[in-house]
Length: 433
Image (cartoon, rainbow, N blue to C red; front, top):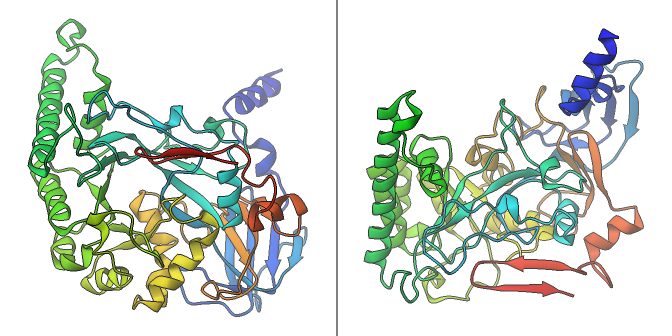
């Protein structure tokens, strides 16, 4: 009876009792790029229970006798991490006010949207799903694993207390400049943000002063709660910014209020690379072969990733899907190398650097014992235009297989591949037929 009660408890908590008893699975024959170390020309990857057991050369490998073995060819590397995406049709704030940190994309993502399967086909296993950039703050982001699921709850990356993880989306520049109540100038934009954080500090002070006396606490304020999480370092700000002056404004605000920030896009980051490096702030950049679309992004250069890397900035790359299709994510890394980023830096920018930007480097981003078994099998070199993603695994479960006709449709497109897909960028919304 006691055993049945314990088993029931494990199932109710979602603990993988059966998964822990799975046989080990071994992959041999591929060239392995662990990211955390040099390439392994003839490597062996052993996984069990959704975790990596070991990675190393085939010669001398301790392969369990009861393991399920897969002989593969090509390249195995960690699952790709997209630090800025809009897959799942997420939405955040509305037109009522410019700062809405209380909004959660968690409440608006459609996990059955085809964009999620397309991201799997691109080798992406972890995503920071963001609301749009039409507000100074359009809401809370969410970090998800691209497992096959029917509920957003099944995709969440959780902390040790079971809480879903995510950051806060903020933006400056022209996107958030509109008619009142939105700001009309850059100066007013910064003033509104500064006041919001001052309000959050006062709210936090009142809560601390009340102590255990519930009657003295201020009324609960979801807007200020989110900003307090930022001030306390529990939520990272993911900040959309393009122009050099806007970038420096973000650095100034982060220093003033002591919040952690990742700069996103940084079209003119090459102009202020040393300032970014001195602030020890990571950057998430986008690589476009056809830049344009807005005046403040005319300074975008493919060389930015390499310039930031040489300045000592921790650089990650993102898709901003649908701006760049998730299926072309590896190509973004190739473009960065072509424009001067090191190959090592570009591989890290697609994997472990993204994990660091999301505070997940102990769990994902490289092939190391104890980390999640998130990895992809490629037909060739990651940065070759001829290379295809052959399969994608999330926590040891295959979620994409190019040899499966259904999955192949997500990879190559065709009739029905995009049916019902929604894109939401804050200032632009639509449906792909």
